[in-house]
Amino acid sequence: MPAGLSNSAVLRAFREARGAAGTGATLLVVGPMAEQLARELAAGGDPGAARTVGRPEDADGLVVVLAGAPAEEEVELARRATRANVPVAAVQLDPAHDAEVPYVLATDVVTCPPGEGFPVSALAAVLARRLGRRAYPLAAALPRVREGISAEATRQTATQNALVALLPGSSSAHFPAMTLNQLRLALGVSVANGRELGREGPVDAAAVLAGGLALRSLARTVVPRLPVGRRLVRAAIAAGGTLALGEAAARRPSL
Image (cartoon, rainbow, N blue to C red; front, side, top):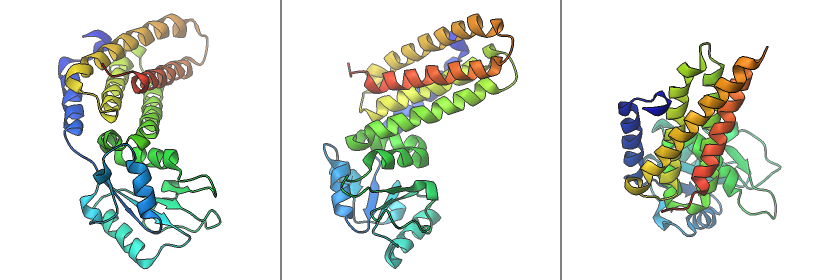
C-alpha cells in the first residue's frame, strides 16, 4: 500500500474511528454557573451531551466551574471522577484565585477573563488532551467545542510525528508510523464533524495517503542535500505536513 501502510493497519484505524463514532459522549458540568456553561457548550448540538446532574462516574469528563476556592461538594465530585478514571477540567471564574484545585492538574484549569464569556476554546483544548479519542464523539455532539478539539488533536499529532522523525533511522522507516498517525487524525476529525465514515472515510484516507507520499518525496529531495540538521528538517516537514492535513480535514465540507 502507498506510504508503507499495511492493509491491516488501515482497517484497524477505520474500526477505531467507527467505534468512536458509534458511541455517545457526555460531560458533567458542576459548580457556580454550571447551567449557563452547559447551555453554551450544548448550543446547536445535543443538550444531553452537557448535563448538570448525574454521577461523575457515568460521564466521559467532568468540568468543575469555580468562583475562587472549590466547595467541599465540588472537591468530592472531582475525587470520585478521578477514582473512576474520568478526566477532570476546571473553569475558574475568579482570575485572582490561583491556588491549586484538588484532583485537577494545573494545566487543566482555564481562567474566565472578566467580561469575555466562558473560555470555550481553551476548555476544548483541555478536553482534547484529557479525553484522547473520546473527544471526537463529544465534538460531534457539541459543535461549540468542535474547532478547539480538532485543533488540539492536530497539534498533538504534529508533535508526535515530529518526535518520530527525530528518531534514528531512515525517513522511509518513519513514514508508515507518521502516515498512520495522520490517518487516525483525519478519521477522528471526520467523526468530530459528524461525517458518515462509510461515505467520507475513503476520502480522508485517500487525502492522507497522497499527503504521505508528497511528504516522503519532499523529504527525500531536500534532506539528503543538507550538510547538518537533517533530523530537525525531517521533524519540521513531518510537523508542518501534519498540521496542514489536520486543518484541511477540519475545513473540508461534508459530501
